[in-house]
Length: 255
Image 1 (cartoon, helix red, strand yellow):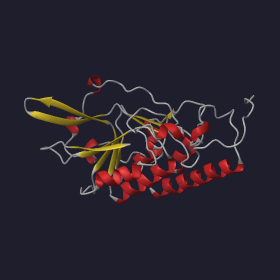
Image 2 (cartoon, one colour):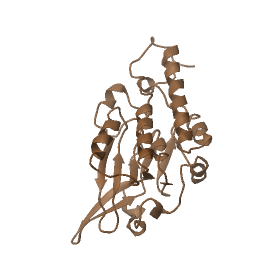
Image 3 (cartoon, one colour):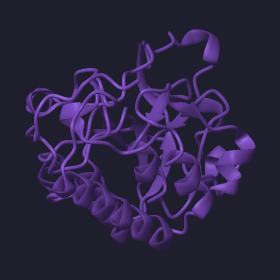
Image 4 (cartoon, helix red, strand yellow):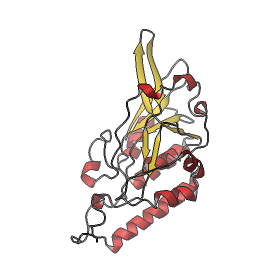
């Protein structure tokens, strides 16, 4: 995941843009980005297809510690004779573990045009053909442990059991499930319908949806090899953090 500062002076303080897949490097990358900056109470604008479960949990706890506000969007900088102008376009994706980063905000706003999508966590190295893979008792222990960690994190952040029940009901061989406005509220992912609550004085600066090119839908999982690539690249998302090496033999295809 890439973190960058977006200035929107003179009308507002600015915000953090967080784009891409969460990897094992992301918590340190954020600390490097935060060094020397006073980020308390700042807004975090998310555009991500998810990533590592445990590293996302670590990031989310750090975001809450800083009292960040969260939203979904794409940071847009336009150039004119009067200089650069920054704004946020709502046509963006927050998928898989990104949803739990969204939950870390003290206040949370989701634009009408945003796509918030969930599914189960899984072994990243076996996600491409989850039904045909073999799983050991150790594998199941890792998944169940990480589900437990995710559940504790969800409740610590003020999320509801509805979020867990919904996300854990969508298997990896099905499409990600896009949450409705009612489900976002039921999960407590949305705390406000007013953009100014998370982006002060930005009401008029939000880019009209007609001006934004739609983003391609991401796949869901990342293999151990792919996770070492740049976090800026479109990638497959959620994996349990320790399940990067295949275990067991080759299973017969599921009936």
